[in-house]
Length: 281
Ligand SMILES: Nc1ncnc2c1ncn2[C@@H]1O[C@H](COP(=O)(O)OP(=O)(O)OP(=O)(O)O)[C@@H](O)[C@H]1O
Ligand SMILES: [Mg+2]
Image 1 (tube, rainbow, N blue to C red):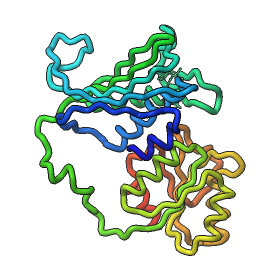
Image 2: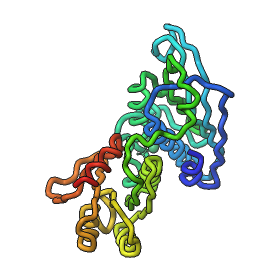
Image 3: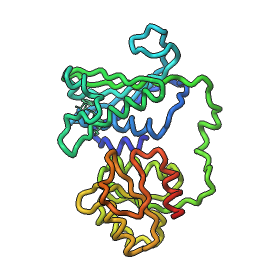
């Protein structure tokens, strides 16, 4: 995630990592883990307006049945993301993981970052723990149970097998939220595709005009200026058969939005399936 974190955090936040030479494996969804870590890193950035180091670390832990975190006894990997930012007062800390709780301005935070991180940790059989004090920084820990069996080293090191015999295609990804866009692009690239990106509908249309070889458009719906559904309509005026995916956020599309595009809910669990459906239409 080095590139992604570097781009999201900027030069005033050096990222330090501390990992032992070896760690137990965990069984979890790597894409979700990435977006959780990214959200924690962005929270840390927001808490350090004048910059400062961010430390990402992981450690193996052994818990007995009487541990304070109310976790099952066993081995865990404890990830931690630590900043030296403004921290939280007791009231904010108590509500931080509540869905939609945010202290950031309207349009800045959805308040879902920590809620999703907590959901992710608990689904994986672990726990999210937040330590914070006003003026003294914040440490967010994600405890994940260690896997019972270690994967073979080969499986861990070879790139994900191209399970589909689908060819790599060229995709234009559009989202006004730079983090979501970055994440979408990373996921598509992980699937082996070539990705162009735009943060505005108008910019996407320019790219479409210039780019002869484009196999698919994937766009967010709620964007300033031009919605995703409008973008797809205009794109199809130029290229009637362009496969398109309309990706909607946590809230539903307004029901009066007509679109013949494939719809996909964010965050993507089934991006690969969505691509298949859109291409087959
Ligand atoms: N590292 C941190 N330092 C200080 N406060 C934090 C930190 N992380 C979270 N918070 C507080 O917890 C609130 C909720 O965080 P959460 O990630 O859930 O939502 P958000 O960052 O406000 O919005 P989003 O993640 O959707 O952009 C934040 O608005 C902030 O007040
Ligand atoms: Mg956040």
